[in-house]
Every structure is written in C-alpha cells, then in structure tokens.
Amino acid sequence: MITIDKLKAFGADTETGLARCLGKEDFYLKMVKMGLENQNFSLLEQALAEKNLEKAFELAHSLKGVIGNLALTPLYEIVCQLTELLREKTKTDYLPMLKKLLDLREELQNM
Image 1 (cartoon, rainbow, N blue to C red):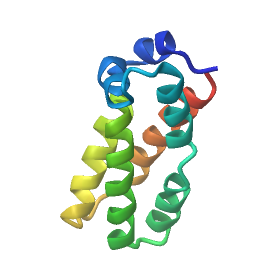
Image 2: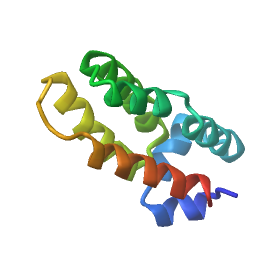
Image 3: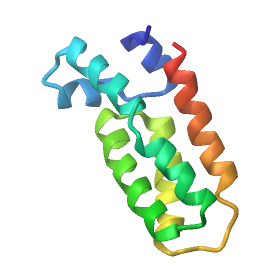
C-alpha cells in the first residue's frame, strides 16, 4: 500500500502533492493510485512501438501533467525529458526512457 512516507522515500514531493489536494492525505493517495493506473502509460508504449511520434507526444504531455500535479518527481523528470524529445520529433531510441518510466511506475504500484 502506498503511503506518504513511502512516497517521500521514493523521492516524491509529497508536500506539494498534498497541497494540491487541499492537505487531504486520503484524497492525495487515491489520486496517486489513479494517476499510476492512467491508460496513457500503455497507450504511450503502443504509440512509440508504432513510431507514431505525434501521438506519443500528446500522450507523454498528458502524463507529464498528471504526474506533475501529483508531484511524483522521479517519474516527472523522465516524462519531461521524453516529452521534450517527442516535441522536437528527435530521432532517438525512446525505449530506454520508456522502460525507466514504466519501471518506476511499477515500483510505486508495488508499494
């Protein structure tokens, strides 16, 4: 079960996340769970597999907003890098970044 202490240890900025949820810990933790279950993670993986960079950008940008609002800093840093590379349609191997993002997500989900 995800807790505030586990999120802090993970590197999340829980003070900011809680402030965005009006200091309501239960609500914040519910939002974190919902954010980690966001279907855009799998849709992003699919778009990158299909080399659809425009769609991948839209999905990464959406995830950036969700993850940023939840103040999940380790995930946010990666999704920001991914979003900017996709914005520029940079020719690169996105799979290592995607894997890191998905691995961090899984780590949080397994708490």
